[in-house]
Amino acid sequence: MADKKKDYSLWEVVKVSETKNGQYRITLKKRIAKELDVKGGNYIVFLKNENGEMVVKKLELKDMKL
Image 1 (cartoon, rainbow, N blue to C red):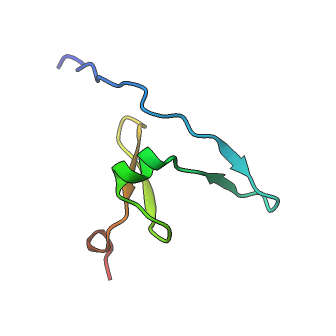
Image 2 (cartoon, one colour):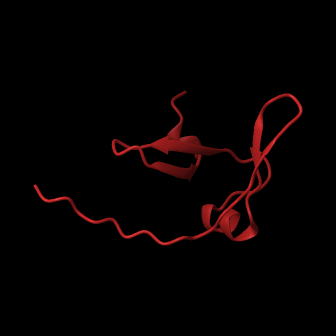
């Protein structure tokens, strides 16, 4: 099976900050927040696929098992 070339383009770069208690924080720029449809208080998840690539998604209530 031939490897399929994935077409990626640079969409945005964000800076990671370290807090005083050793945690890390990222700030989403408006265009990223708008694309993900997130607002203050929402959650986003970082998923990792079988190729080791990270995917960022807005966490929806329907995604959670209660």
